[in-house]
Length: 373
Figure 1 (tube, rainbow, N blue to C red):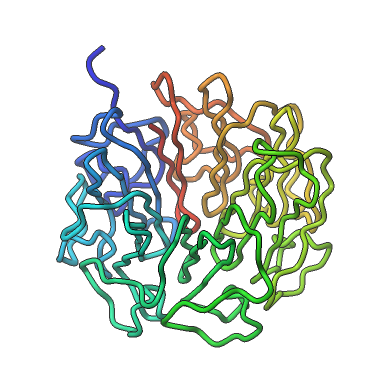
Figure 2 (figure 1 turned 90 degrees about the vertical axis):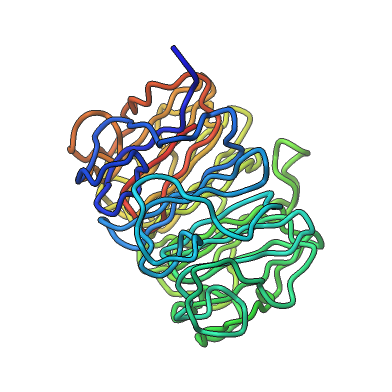
C-alpha cells in the first residue's frame, strides 16, 4: 500500500489540490504531492471564489506547507506565483495551528501569538497596515491565543481568558464591535466571554459559550453568532445582519460539541449521538435536509449520527463520521463532494477518499474543494 497521503478533490483551477497539475477539477480524491499523512498534524483550506483556492498543512516539525492560488501572497513563500504542489511558508518554524481565509492565511505560534500573510486590503492580517504580505507578519497586540479562525476577508482569535478578538472586513458586522468599520488591528468582540470554540464563515461567525458538551454537561452552553445574516446563517429566526453577537436558537437537545461555518451556512454537532444541525443558505442543498429552502433556525440533518468533524465550503458541507468515512452534500459543479459526479446533492453522499483512518477534513468558506487526511 505504501504510506498514506493527504488527499484533496474538487476545483483545481489555481492548483489548490496540490497534485502537481492544473487540471480543472477532480471528482474523486487525488494525492497532494510530497506529504505523508503521518507528518500532517492539521490542514486548512482557503479560497475566495469557485476557481480560486489554497491549501495549508501544518507538519510535525511545526513548519507549514502551502499550495494553490497565490496572487496576494497567501502561500507565504515570499512570491506571488501560484503553485500546484506544496511549498514551505518562509520564516515559520513554531506553528501549532493554522487557518485559511479567502486570500489570507494565519498560524498560531507556540508562544500563543499569531502571524498572518496574504491579502490585507481590509486589514485582515492585523498588523496595522493594509498592505499585502507574501511572508508571515505578526498580528499586533495579541497574546495568549488558543484558537484562530479565518473568514473571507476577516479573522478571529480566541484568547485563553475566553474573549474573542476580530479584525479585517466589517461591512456586515462580522467583527462584532457594533460598527461596520473595518479594522487592521484586533479588537474585542462586544460582550462575549466564556467562549470555548470559534468558527468563521465567509462574512459571519459563531462562538460556543461554555465548555464543549464532551467536557461537561451542556448547562449554560449557548451558540452566539454575528455578522451577515441574509440567509439566516446566524440562526436567530431573522435575516437581519447583527453587528454584535446574538443567540442562535438552540432547536436541539443535549449540548454542542462542535461548531462550523461555510460560506453562508452554519453547523453544530449536538447531543450524545453527535447529530448535525445546520442553518442558513441552502441554494445547493448545503444544509443536507433534503431541500433547497434556506433556514433561519437550525434544522437537523436527517439520518446522520456519529459526526466527528464538520467543515463548510462555499456552498457544500463535509463531515467525518465515527467509522472514519467521509460524507458530503451541497454544490458539486467542481466535484467537491468527491463522489465521482458533478451533480449537487441535498442529502449526504459518500465521498470516495481512498483513505482509511481519516481524522482531519477541511473545506474553504469561499471555495469549491475539499481535503482529508
